[in-house]
Length: 269
Image (tube, rainbow, N blue to C red; front, top):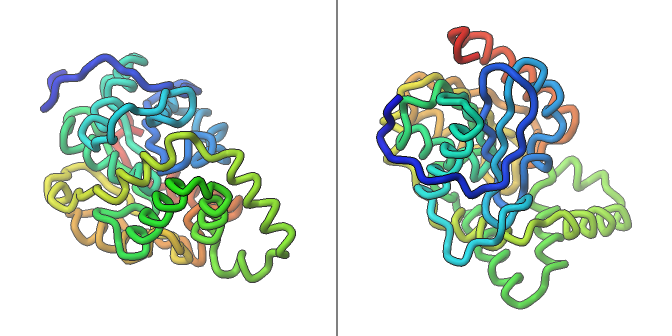
């Protein structure tokens, strides 16, 4: 199979699980495969091969020695999938991973069967751009505990925040800090530079866009703009869901993804 771009040797730490048609997973900034997809990995692996590359500074992938570039990251994800023996795949992108997935689909269109884009954005909206700026500034000042608190406030819904006790929020911030990958700042630096608006018109595969309506980090309007810019895209709202989906919202997400996969040709789904 030929593609639009040549592939280099894969250099990312890759999680692989299951068997069947390939699902390539693209995680978000400051996250990882288990952090983003952990609640559904076992279910999806029942009938799919899950391929989850970790960006530089996440998982066991070393921290990058230069700013991350979207094209290179897209090529590395593609190379990681091909290295597992899968020439084509369905892409599931979360947050920053949605932009990565879109760029994979435009650089390697013959390899991509379909896209599922959750809490995604074509370009950082004002809230996300400010959050990225604050994370970079706090990290530069060594205030990592404040980075973790900002992450908690941004990634929970208003309802979740209203119901949490202050002591529990402190515990959650500590857990968030412990789980934060070393490449977090590099990831958010890329978030602040991403722009895939010109890519959207070139997508010619089935696309499911999932919009968590309670998202306080990536505004729901960003998902709406993704769906509006992609011909034939299906938009599904997750009512009240936060940027990081809780167990109930992830279960709803899984139902929508499963239904979408059933609409695809058998070799893709």
